[in-house]
Image: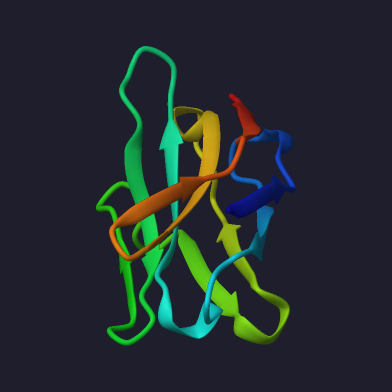
Length: 117
């Protein structure tokens, strides 16, 4: 079983920054071989893709966050980060960390990010 624990959410003013952290533990054979990503669920919308740190193909971002958010991974610490800059009120939502191995996805419990205008 795989566990993902997010932290770092909070309340920030528009234009501000936050760093989200996700620590992965459990029965992953090798953290360096699995993708690590972030999704979010904003009010009134379905959960959506934010960013992905692939094990081999580099990083990918949604159009809504590209240029403002940066995803990085530290395999030695089994951790993935999401650095968010120039935050906007529409970035408000619950941010979830996700990974997958052998076709099975595992999600964290989420961390709330609130951006005030």
